[in-house]
Image 1 (cartoon, rainbow, N blue to C red):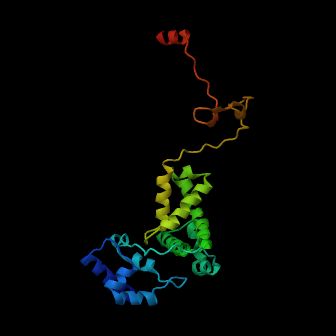
Image 2: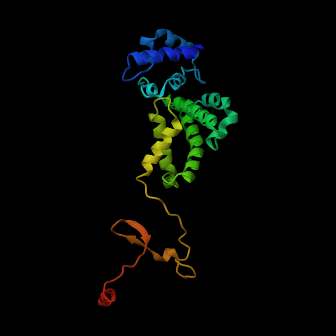
Image 3: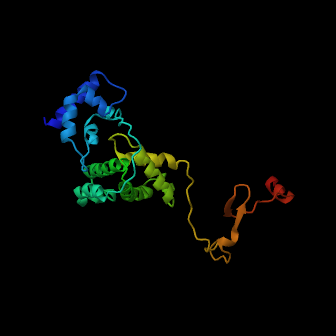
Length: 244
């Protein structure tokens, strides 16, 4: 058993003996100062911060959900390309995982890259946020073609970006960041009406001379621009046809 496994085993034992409502770095420092000292010295991220995600990721899922990072003051925005380079250079040959992951290992690597960028973005690096949004968009584009609800996001670029930026701000513990994004978009898509794309220069029917643009009106009841659909008028003739 290596040192990390011993730390995780110690924390798991403490959590099972007296389960708290939440855990964070202060809880570890108070309950297991030896573990905290090892983590502070040896468990570091690509940008040389304490890698709490590596610790919580190694815990059982029921304990992962208890993790609540300490509430810091609002981070001051900054731009540091070096931090992004430290993360991406480590996985430079594996960035394809955002487009077409091959196996479960690729999915894990994708989440490691995403979470590393999330933490730097949460610390205030706006370039990390931009880079993460760009990478995750490749994954989302695949979802749009694969899942019915997700297809409702097609053509809503600004809204997708806002949802992604919200996920980056809210993400807490070491569950899958991409799964969190997927669920967020899936649930939000239920209130979105599917878009129907067509050219208004097309004819309204095969061999018709009238174009669709000539058949568009403004509906004052809904304030929408919609194709004109004539209402069938009631008449004695139509009623007699039904009786016959």
